[in-house]
Length: 231
Image (cartoon, rainbow, N blue to C red; front, side):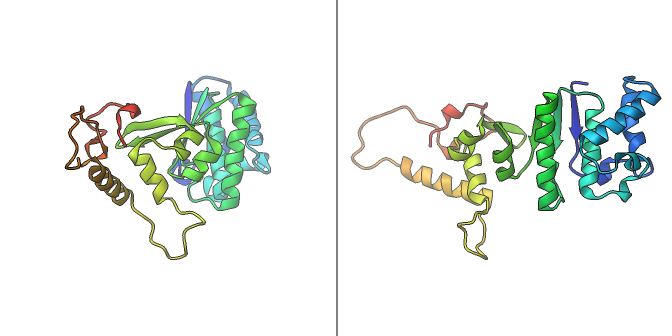
């Protein structure tokens, strides 16, 4: 019960033929955390904790009877049923409108402070990550290529991949109908620029040890060491 997970699509994660209350109770009964009566009482408390409107009625309802935001609140309640120390939220705002998305993120931050809960937020949305996370780990091909404080990573990226991600993100300064860059294209331009700058001039006489450049950066071959990247 160290960690629990909130999946990105609650409609497919929830059991469609089982009432919401029973799904929360099932977690506590499976882990032998409470009697059936105590588990139902705790399930109601959890729905209240995640600000579910009319929780008593929702206990008897099925997933298809709830809105997307309500289903995500149920997923969070289920994840909290085992009293975890860490909550892993995988794209928790997928397919939600802007208003509901803000509510879900605010709820996660409220639960973090109220329950002294650690939250691992997985997302491709750099804006959301920067606004809600203390630290960021950037992954490429299943490996961490950069880590640090949120402001540090987003404002002064050390990894070529992180820099490429930031360049591909839309912003208010981009004119309408402008084609956004693709990560692979940005990294190719960075590589070409690094190779061009690395070419020695005709008057260069000093011999130095070679420094790794972007063209030689391969996360499959090298361990995570941002200080070894020369760019």
